[in-house]
Figure 1 (cartoon, helix red, strand yellow):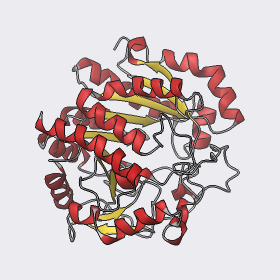
Figure 2 (cartoon, rainbow, N blue to C red):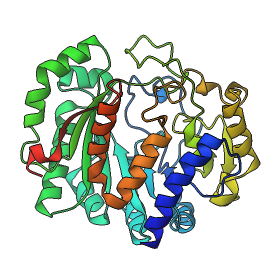
Figure 3 (cartoon, one colour):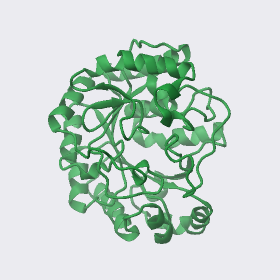
Figure 4 (cartoon, rainbow, N blue to C red):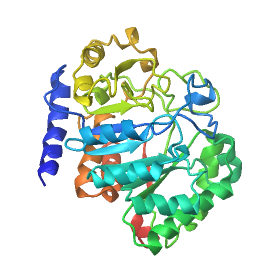
Length: 366
């Protein structure tokens, strides 16, 4: 209860100090993205790693991970185990989830599910994962395999279905969502033609939500791509709100501003040489916050150019980034299964909201 009260207070504080433009913040981040590994088994057409290779491939050492959790457990609302790589590649991912769970840290995971064997599914569920988000971009093998290069439609779909069967069989509470990116006109036609049959595959399975959305360009990384149709930028600038609500730690302990910094081009600190608290209000973080407020971000991180987090419509005056972090922070208290309803509300407040909720759990006999 005490921690929940702190999370609620920090939800308010993060938005208040974002609007005020505070540089040195009187609270610690609400959310923490932790990269188990930057290795990936696929070459998806909308991912920066399809264009450039990582200079160094590695996995986070468990000792570093435990130190992160030990420091963050008293203030963080939730963690996301993913940045640039496929987290299932980490050999001790279930151990990472279990350690966070034992520290009362709400833990979420984003995955392409291509490596999600039944054995690994069981270990992840038993470890106490709070929420899992499946990236599955296509309702047919033809479209899916064109986007998720190196994956197999039927095999990966079977992995997800088996995960949900195990969740149901052993009555696990893990929230499960599936997202489909609509990449182009072919993808749109495929989606409209096959979505109803695709939904039937999850009948009577505990899938909480299916949603669709347009892809982004990861800032400037893919802004000139002709491989897919990306979300168009808005006309109103909002400073990157992630800098006021979240922190991102790469596999080697490097702190970066957001999930678009796959290659650590704008480092803001290094853990454990610096504590999370020291990084959060360190000189580099404060300088970058000031640059955001002054629209001088290009002097520090050129990937910010063309980033949709800076040029998207607000909802109820709240820009993307902090909006999602605030919503998920609230869900860490009331339940991650409520996230879908918050997204539906956002869609009603702004019809141009990029995420379109297709179905919610009650349709699947949750």
